[in-house]
Image 1 (cartoon, rainbow, N blue to C red):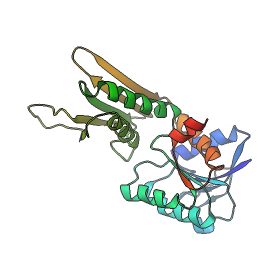
Image 2: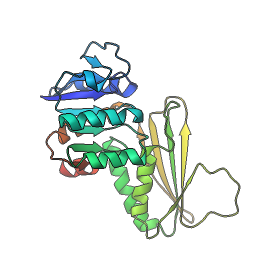
Image 3: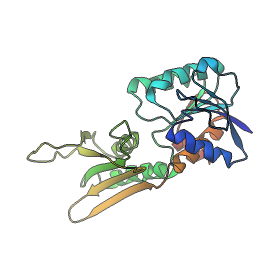
Length: 252
């Protein structure tokens, strides 16, 4: 049975992952890591990586960008594969994941949903067919406590779109200024924050007299929890390197 160390265990996503793992028989959470060390009744919780005295096969990190350096340092020192599900990472932090992947297996994706991975491929194909003649807009919506905007998923979808285009697009974020004309190579990215929205992403291809929309709607956090657990099982069998949902889907 796969033994998991869950970073961010007392956060909203950590609680969902804990409940999902409790219903499975192929893995278990042997310890948690969180600044909030309140006992959850499932496993021991540590406030610092220095205090962890339990051996795990893989780490799932669903915490906060500020916790990444400590998690990564622990993963490297113990040679433990790590699934990094935390969003809002800086370019420097993503580079640190790349460096770490030369020593341990690292799984990193802006979105842990299988459906979003499929949408990413669909919009790349759509952009390759429609991109020269259609305007492209990306709209995303999340709950009012999400710390990053636009979302990592929106940026991932924008990157997929750009790979299907014959030109390098310019991204415009939440534009409000009045202007005369939209530029040809522009992709608009719009972020909405409100209520308890789990995650909505829509890529709009708007042409002359027709509109094509590719969208994904997450109705609960469990889709991300299941994705991160499956990623942990997948990663536990891998050699050092950088992995994502694309590789997991391709090898499933």
